[in-house]
Amino acid sequence: MTKFYVYAHMDEDEIVYIGLGRNDRAWVTGCRRNQEHKDFMNERYAEGDASFVVLLEQKLSEDDAKSLEKRLIQKEQPRYNREYTESHKQTMKEVSKKAVEATQKAVVTPLGKFISITKAAEAHKAPQTTISYRCRTETFEDYYYV
Image 1: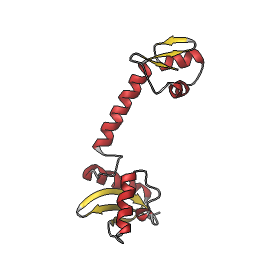
Image 2: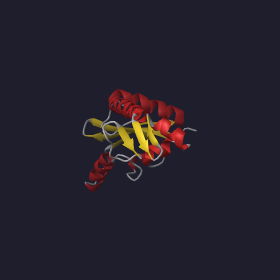
Image 3: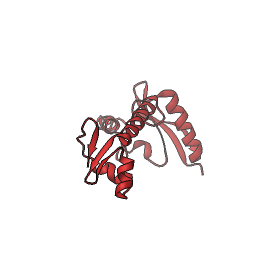
Image 4: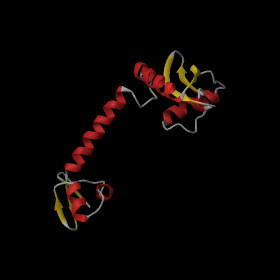
């Protein structure tokens, strides 16, 4: 079916967001995950302005819309888009690195001290996510305390 479109949100001449949608998605604020983006839209609406929404291409299949959206985000790097941007890639690399470091950090539990969350989970016969969740937010230099 060809009921999808790709749209942009504009701040004067700057593309600040690129998305895909159908029906009224381009104009709706409630489904936005980024609070700054919601605020941007709500400010425009409060001024009586909906012209910041520009439909770039219409009557697309879902696959074509996804492909075009991705290409445009990669090219334009809009400030309110997270996926497909260089800053998102960098953030994900940092998150991955921290996750690996966290799983390699020692853990102290009532059963003893373990060299990693993975080893503690195995000893407790519990999912790794359970041990991770129970790790206190305060960490000591060399280990987590559960």
